[in-house]
Structures are given as C-alpha cells and as structure tokens.
Length: 203
Image (cartoon, rainbow, N blue to C red; front, side, top):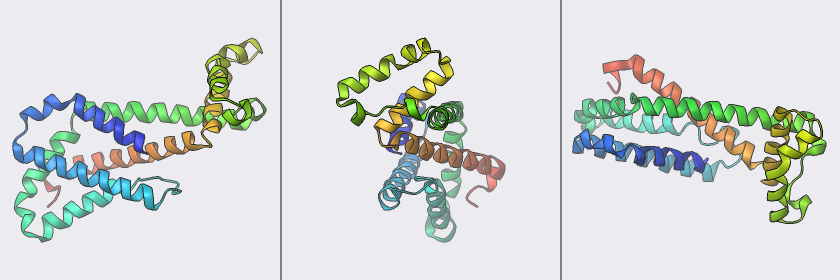
C-alpha cells in the first residue's frame, strides 16, 4: 500500500511545474488534501493491516472531513476555491492516464499470480527453499528462459515467475497489488462523482 503513496507522490513531483499556474490558496488546499489523505491511509494501514481492501476508503473519509468542514463551519467561505482546486487537479490528463495504466498493470499481475498458483503450484519456488537471496534472484532472473525450454509458453512461464516472487515475499506482493487496485478503483469512483457533481461539488 505504501508503494502507491510513493508512486503518486513521485507523479505529483514530476508534474510540479503544473502547480506554478496555481494560486497560493490552491496550492495550500492541495497540500492539506493530500496531507490528510496520506495521514488517513497510514493510520488505516497500521490499524487494519489485514483488511482485504487495504486503505481503500481513505479518499471517502478525506472527502467527508472536507465536506463537513466546508458545509457546517466558517470554512465554508472557501468551498468554491477548494472545489476549483480539486477539480482542476483531478481533471488533469496525467492523473487519469496514470490511474488507468497502473490499474491495467495490477490486473495483469494479479492474473499472473493467480494462474501461477492455480495451475503451476509445483513449479513455484520461494527464497527460503532456495537457501540464499542470491540463489533466488538467479532463479527468478532465469526462470522464464528455463521454463520455456521445458515446454512452457511465455504466459505460463511468466505466471510461474511472478507467483514465485509473491511466494518469496510471503504473499505480500499479491496483497499489495490488491490494496493498490482497491485504492485506484476508489479514486476512479471519486473522479466520476466529482465530474457529475460539477459546480455542486462541496455545496
């Protein structure tokens, strides 16, 4: 789940030049939004480490906090500015493209891992079974070529290799992929709601 934080922060930094066109108020709003969002995700990650959905729900909680503050407190005078800042940010093409790309990659990774476990469980090897980290790395790096010589298709060979990585990490590879996928789906739902709400967002 923390990998998703790093990806999104890195993407934001790479697009930092976009912030130059923002007013100071909008920049502060975005900092508060993402600061609260990351804080809630960290809290949920520590409190619910075994949740099937990971930290999905953090965006909804962050939105609820902003909504209450902008609806029922003196901070409501900033509602139009907050709406404008968030809509400008989340409507950027790179946000949607990065979400779609990462979601597609995650779906393929999850598919490969599941197929590897389901149909080729006897070929999956973990680090503990290989004895050393170097031995595991060598096995994984050569896995696809070796498996192809044994008659496996590239698809099956890749499935076995990725499942081996997951087994080496005690299942955390697949778990993290599921967490990030759930978060991406939540953000996509948030984008749809925000687009449909239009000027009624935070009103």
